[in-house]
Length: 377
Length: 102
Image (cartoon, rainbow over all chains, first blue to last red):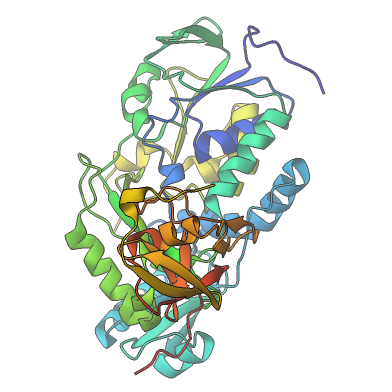
């Protein structure tokens, strides 16, 4: 392994060291490129440390079949990602893909989800995948903790979850093993195209790099216009409740409730159009807790040990954005709210496109150009 | 390691820890009574099984978890010890029964 001096100009500077930035940095470093990650540090909003850690396929891609295909392929590539991280770092990221459930608390809710899955699979040219519609008894047979208020569920065998904090740690350990120059407390304030590359500046000084990748989450909105890109987002706030650790009782992840590999139960999936405050709103967390207890009544005995809120990196249509600047080639923007589900795509595929300098046609559909044309009906 | 302050000794009460009788002072928290009696570890962690004992004494660290009168995962520092209380080590994570009592 070659050792890169930190004062040497990197081939690629990545702005942001969350799951997106770390996946891309790892993928590029594995190809032998000199990579520098400029990370804001612990003051960052860091969706990567607040997420729900699902690897989720079911329900994604309505109105955008390419997103369904991209997501499905990512879930299928997860075992490879977990295995390679483990062999490089010794860290077990707790990958578990037993399939996942959407639990419905009324017949109307169940019908809405059944209709949605049918619409998704009826789109022309979309990928299809197996899923099952289960009634109350069938659901309870697979998850004995299911409560009487559950009308039914949708089960998709491709879904799963992971320990996302260990994933984050494994990626950063892998970056270190590949001599990636990771710099915390390096918020980037300006990026300027220069001959043959870019100059990135912050309170810490200046750095030049041949290519730059914007993986700064919400920060992309400010940075993208500096290199002829756009990073449109809508405010999306989510809350999560975490309980004390309990002995395993829930074999499968549910889209709003999952038991982690260490025993704690996470309750999540709220969404508010709020981009201003990270204060926990207990009128929302109480509804989340109530619905979770109706799904699994035994949760009512568990103590809550933490609650938190975070902002999702949410594009206007909820699908990821990957784009190379037309006016400043070599500058890329990458953003997705599904940083866990899509981690393999970002580490294996997106990193390749950035290394070669070309985003292939089938992935170029994720550019922001889709927001500037009238939606097809 | 811990010595009781003279003004913190009042009426004696007796409780058990893992079946062993322990004498405490009225008003003690369970965690304080355990420390005063020389108990250093009152639980094992769910992840690695490491022994742990009371630490912050103010409800934040969750290191003093014990089973009290049959209920798992009580924070010993937030519960006042009572005469005849049955306190037990919290071994790993609490258990939930899949079929809750109706």
